[in-house]
Image 1 (cartoon, rainbow, N blue to C red):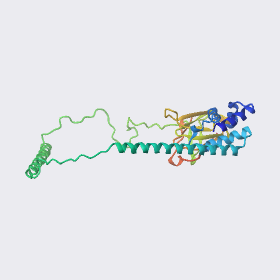
Image 2: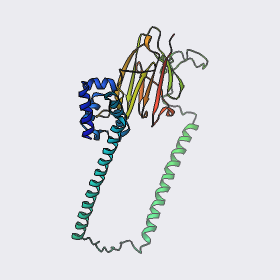
Image 3: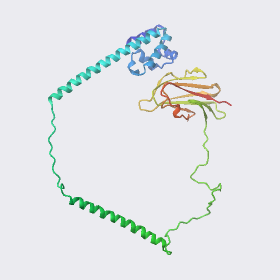
Image 4: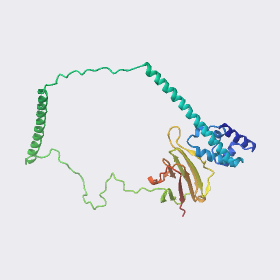
Length: 309
């Protein structure tokens, strides 16, 4: 795979392009371009479809044969897979031989255990004693429960019996359930106001309305799972967003991208994901409410449309 990367680097230098300029033209991050030119394709194992897409973009900018470049990548990937399978088979073969050799050296014989007779065998009187003890305990429990119930009932029938601490209420108490002033002090009756009004049109299709007088707003994405993403604003691919693979950071936290837009210039946006499960989206810090129907394990598209006054 070093030949593919070397060919790309040689063609880029022949066109007098820096790797940053190539990144701007292909919308591929500089880090990914470095990996491709250095032949570090093993970092993208399982993402061969994305690598093919990157190679086609690079070939179009550098005037290379995209089909030939893709076929070279497929052939070399298959060669590496065959080599890995061969190494795995050789390792398993050696491991099995070592297990067989160790099995011949050591043998294990289960010890012959003899059962020691119990001292209670053939002594049925022990079972009778146990049953008698259990019966006595059950009778004692019944007597205690009956005595407690009877004594409590007798006190309640005695006219001279009064509770020691009767409940008292001080002050004016309104017990009318229809009185509007009779409210629970622990209950908050004030409705919650949200800054952004978000309305669902269809699956992953929303329209939103900002407070009056808002000039700018932010759109934030949290990538909870590894996924390729591409963003378009007003029907055109947005230059401020890198089209690449996003995913969780090394510490497990979601990778976050936050963008700011001007209300006067914004109409709508479209975010394409290769895998939308685990992602969260926010407008001015307010999360867009997603349902189970919005979760997709394949290519999906989020649409947001701004309602203007």
